Image (tube, rainbow, N blue to C red; front, top):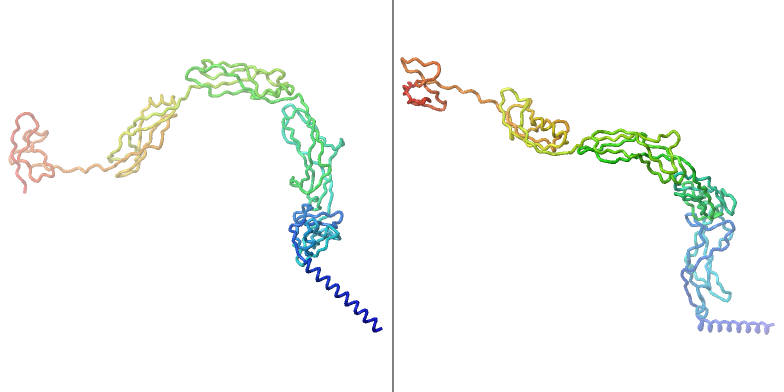
Length: 475
């Protein structure tokens, strides 16, 4: 028994020494090494039917952000290892709608690979993934028409079909949050100035309540056929009447206005001729040498293929207003300055006494200006002595106006000078004082500034003066 145990012990020791020797030789000749593969695509597996991966806005997405993978393997396998030999997987098995924190697993793509993932060897090691249920919805098809048809064309009721069969609704499919926003499938047809039936395949776009497209959805059918009948019709057209004026008024006269009664005529006809008519003309009205307004009834000229609607006139009443030319003018004239409202007893001075005025008006008003005297007045009512800067007012006939601001003059008002007493020389003794008109012997008036009177004063007559006795000074 003891021999058997000894034999077993020897066998175990031999196996242990052999494995240790193998490991030593293997690791010394083929050591461990690491390799990093950046931006390895991340795959989602195990997604349940009826679910879809969406981003933060609810848009469906099939791509997940890549990850960086670091692997550990022996040196011999490292030389043969490539990025396609490994894959990063996010397992969504058993996960329902909502947000999930899903770990990232690394798997080999070949069965003969042997490697390990060290701690922190996957970056990021987990990822937040949002799942949403797939929903379908049947929504009505809405057709928008743009543009206008030519006059005398009309459109019929549009028809929408798919595969030759009428259709009024379509199906949208996608994330439930986006499907719930859809209210209709919109398409648009442009019929601007069309003269034939519109027929075209149009794409359908899911839209929300505000008419904005909802993306991230599939639609069935994606396109439909839209047909809009457009046919010509015999109809009416309201057309303005423009009289034909020939000739010129007499010299010095001009046309100031033209009126037509009635101004519009309802024209009947087929689509082609009616489309070509924009305005109706009349028989010519000759104004040669006219000096006054003209009122005439003139016939309307109707193009071929058209006629006035029943009850409409075939002639119009035309009034051509003619008046004499009113030529504008501008002239500069002098005007004397006159004061009004001057207080009693006041004296005045005006600078300048004549002002120059620039006037504008019509030629007819110029005639009236020549017949009237141009005066410039300054109102000094209520003003006392002093110097004033006052505006000038110019009286003008109708049709004439002053150019620019009224001129101003300087007016000085003052009181009259007070009367001064004139001294009279005394009469000599024994000689009576003369009366009546002064004669050669009269004593002249002395100015107030003179202290001593003069001895004699010559008289004005041409005869030799007669000496006048000297007056006796009064003490």
